[in-house]
Length: 255
Image (cartoon, rainbow, N blue to C red; front, side, top):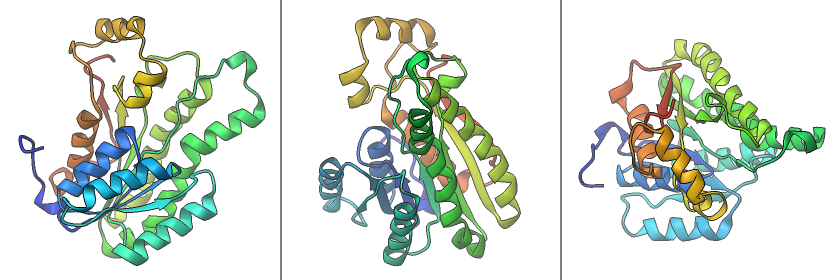
């Protein structure tokens, strides 16, 4: 990370990342820790998350705090956020990243599955914001970054509930930026494209899919979690103090 920007305003700031145990989330955790932030991250996957926390403990100014949490359990989510704040202090940066882009044909989608996908991909964004907002309002500042996706713009097929949730996140970002703006709190959205995470490679990254990506993007290279994390750092830092209510695309020029 030596060749990229450093943000003095992030040093010592309390940053909470949901879904921080792997993929894009893990890169976000690593980048904030490298900036000297006090990082807490939530995830349901204990093994990978514990390994990430341990790997960063010896190299970071502040050892990251991992809290196991099922994002679909809002009571547990709020308790985890309260624990993070009790340990590190009021959250100053919230990154709503947790999601699951599980494939599902529209013909077989049940009401129960639809509700589950909303819980996994959308609902916790709002309630995490609700939990950290009082502290941000009291401080008169804060940055909230919600992770959406270009999937609803393309639009992608084969995962309609996920696509709908990701579109909803943009709407949530817009309205909450107006709700919290008078208190100095910024709310922005990041929309990744095809990011070559370990999960994507393992489950869906076929030669045919890669060809589609390379044909669709203006940049003919694979995008990595780090490409997303670096934009999130900027949106969290004071360098972007005048930016709120916006959607920022990281997709190599696909849309």
